[in-house]
Length: 215
Image 1 (cartoon, rainbow, N blue to C red):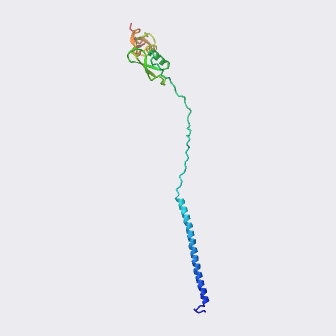
Image 2 (cartoon, rainbow, N blue to C red):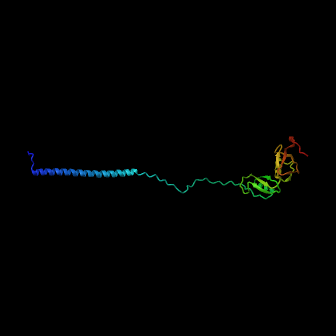
Image 3 (cartoon, helix red, strand yellow):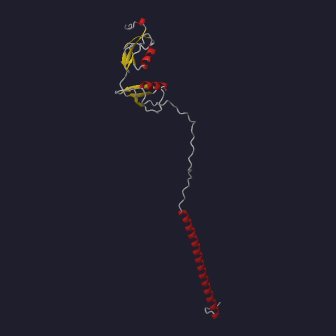
């Protein structure tokens, strides 16, 4: 056994050992703290990097749009329906003007505006207007309705007689039938009447009991 009194050499060794152990503990603690700080810093950088990446807004998808027009699918085009055009008859005699309208397959209507003369002042629709076949064109005449002779159409076919009277400018009125033979008409044949006046026709057969023509 050793007594409680250690020798100076042994004491020195213990002090050295204690100091050495303490220094080693301090060094280990410092190393551990440094390592922990480094690791913590690395974790902080990783966390910061991760957080930064997460905080960065996600870019919206880019949509490309063509600036060139897309050709549309079209059905085969049909030829345009064309019709006659209103002829330029202003300044011409109304009788000649209506004849040209009939040649183009158009109907006519005369409006006499008084004054004097037989010339067409204007038309409706205007000259050059594209119209459908059979369209009625109004002719405005700078003068009164002329007085013309009523043709004698007794004993003629009713339809043919009506066409003849209309050609002379009269308005046909049927009093009995629209077919058969003309038995009489009023005004009578060879009389004078203004253009556009009505002419009444009696058509039929004498055997049907229709009145006899006036002498």
